[in-house]
Image (cartoon, rainbow, N blue to C red; front, side, top):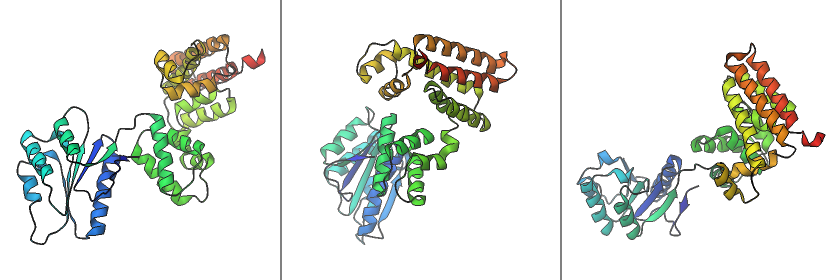
Length: 329
């Protein structure tokens, strides 16, 4: 979900793609190349790394051609260019050649900032390609991918896909493309489940989420699937511990905005919202019981018991019951 400047002509003399999200950087390059080849099918594309762009190389690549051919010159990791090569680039920015599009990929930050500032001052078309580290950003990216393909997906489906795939943007984009190609009509959570159940259900955190929500049957089903697909029992006890502790932390916290609570409790804001929904029905006694159950399960899977699977099942059932302790008075 790269952000562009208002002057969004991919055939502008200079495109500056800034950030560290590889998929978005590659898409910025692909957009320029596609536009250039639409204008001239014989466009010459040169894709260079800093070690390939030596002093004098840019001048050679951008010198007038006998055939006046269109060129796209891509420079990756521009922040790593040598001082002499940066001088060449800055000189070129002052007098760009016709029929040539220069694409600079820059990580942003302090390193190479002089070149970044010079490109902006020269009026570069800028594409922001920030690293998507927050789940909310990946969720927004997933929604935009469906929209770009002209497809409708429910919010629950988008969230399920992010939960199943994780942080790899390329895999997320690929999954959206596959679902859009294979499924007719609105894509919902059930569809995502059919395609990616092996990944989503195998997550140890899915087991923990279902348990702290009091959904015993679903938690046990997720647990059995996780174990069957090779998830280590110790990862499941760790997820259970995190889930119960989060309930305990938020239960004892003063009310406030998610951002304030996130700072106070050391959780991301999106998790505050999720835990608030999960903690309904919990009591302080229930949290204590659940923590003891996790401790016993942890000992059981680390050699303190004869049957790690039974230890986990017992913990899951105990936690799910504790999640409904308020309702039992």
